[in-house]
Amino acid sequence: MKPEDTEPQGGGKRPQDHTGNNLTGARTLSSLQELRAAVNECKRCPLWKAATQGVPGEGLVPSALMLVGEGPGDSEDLRGQPFVGPAGGVLDQALHAAGLDRRSVYISNAVKHFKFESRGKRRLHIKPSTGEIEACRWWLAEELRLVGPKLVMALGATAARAILGQPVTVSQTRGVPTRLSASAHLWVTIHPSLLLRITDEAQRHKEFDRFVQELKDALAWIAKNPS
Ligand code: SF4
Image (tube, rainbow, N blue to C red; front, top):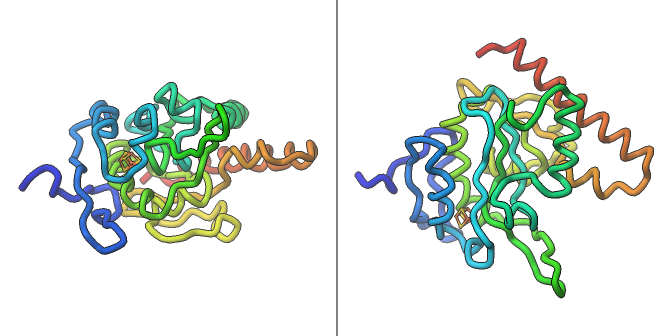
């Protein structure tokens, strides 16, 4: 059996395109140190074409807590690291307020290449399509398998969609841990970029505090649920 033919073990089925054909180009990783090269070689969806580089997850391995966002933005695309732009700044603030930092968790995204449209010199982020999310689920499943989290926090609906393989409404599932596998649960919350879009300062502070409390609650849940 070729490595490309093996199934990921972190959850999720082999990705297929809209006609039900298996996508090719995946491989099973021996360690996450191979992930950057793997996503930079990946052509399982069209997003690699316009992006500068692939953006693999990074952080603590193994880690009890894994955070998953939507996809790289402009800064992430240029630096090759997840959550290093404005939303990453908010996430860092929230992690710090919850007594964490990014080195104490694993952080990744549903898709590993930047999807954007050009407006003059600016590159504006576009939400990845269902097909692109499905194609990239291979790598997310590999990360789940190798990181081995007890709790996966989906930052927004796209991340939750990628992890579960079906549409998710954040407002209906937020903050309620649901079982993903024998060893892992999912916790759905907001994407930190949402906080950047709230113009009312009092409301923004309120939502930030709620996000921080969720991170604290997630840590408490992990402590109470050792396996
Ligand atoms: S976004 Fe994911 S599936 Fe698409 S080319 Fe990049 S690594 Fe491959």
